[in-house]
Image (cartoon, rainbow over all chains, first blue to last red; front, side):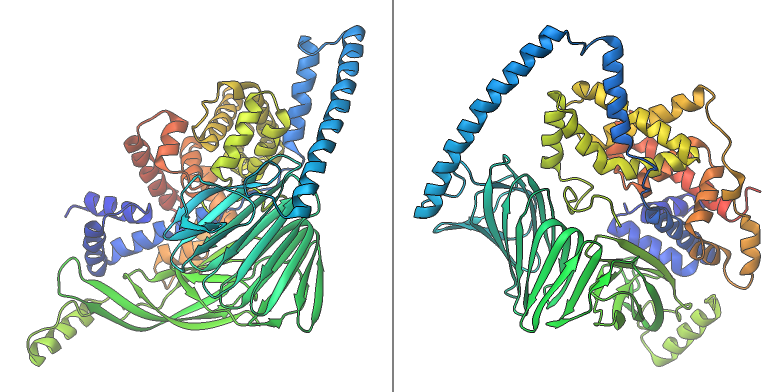
Length: 409
Length: 200
């Protein structure tokens, strides 16, 4: 294989677009070519560093600036120049329209109240919020009334719909509807955790269920109630922007950006104000603390490495790593996609099995504010892998000796 | 802390598609508040990209405001059903290019350019790539980026920092995906060479 072909394979790997066959071929080349391995690790590290570059808050509201400029240009070009008579006509028209709208809204409200009082409100009927399914993967069911069926992408769900998914599935949906809408829905997670939402007014709601993890985010300009009920606690949020993260195993992190939130618990209620977060693990409440930058320090030690399969390009090296470090409680932590358990103090120490031969791993953390942090952790050089099982002990010994001599360490 | 986090953030991008579509639809009918709301969700991302493209915050603010103004003015030409993000970034890239063409570009501040060779000296005993890149801070990376050509810089930022697909990049640049992939490949090679001091 030529150098240029090797470099193309490395780029395909770094760019995240490599076929399994090419991936196996590259792994084989990386085992035997130190320079190529350094190149791959260097480019991977650069790409990770590029991905970590954060968005930046501008010095002022640039959208408002553009809108002001737009209005100013409109005045200059005369597109919105109004005569005094036109303004008077417009004012009168607006007043009449407002009176009609008030009367119409009052009529709708009277109808809505009657529905609520008699309990006859139908899901999806006028006056109820609709939830539009925007992402769907795996097996997700929806129950409306007595009907239970598989959920479909783009489907509109009415108030009271119940959504269920298993651990390997995910679903997210957003609300749509007019400002007078009122609706409710509920979500069931695998461990019996349930979440219920009641919203009034023009709010945007995003619920994301990812492989047994619930992330709920709410932004509302009017009072609303969000309930996340687990076996250990329930959360109520009113009039604010929150991010809530639950790992489905009893851990919950709740961050409040605006308004206020209350965590209801058998031992009492905890109230959290904007800029603060609550972390609870296995039913035990953590302290309320100010939301700070996401801390992540990680170390990784290679415990064992071995090659599975035969000495073919498809053979993959599996490694056991001891990954440990410190982050914040309530953080979702993964190493190359494998989840790690974080204790109530934010510590983690776990053995994970990974495939591949690169000597760096990426540890990723995410909190309820959706703050993300990644660190690239360098491993000590791995001991040489055994590409095949030689037929005799003598051959095995020779093979092992040959590989030790060739290994960079 | 994010200024406006949850509302429109979905699992697979800065905005859920249906929500964006709704705001674009309203924007096309003349509802500038709806379009403004959508632009605000992208404000920090676009500003970060442009700041790294031109190197200065004040100039970047000027450019982004101009790009947003262009977006307001040309939203009626936006094809409904197409992704909004590449369209918006295309406007931003074009405004950046115009600024450069009109000679309004100022030199990138020298203080953001680190001495990569000095970094190398700090870790003489280990493999240069791993040492250099593992310890690279955001400022160092931005320094290396600043020495690339503007087009290389934009491509790398859009591909890896903004995580745009080649399909989106093809929409943005009106170029075939294969060609863009090749350019990204070359740009990442140049960035690596710069970081290792090979280009000095």
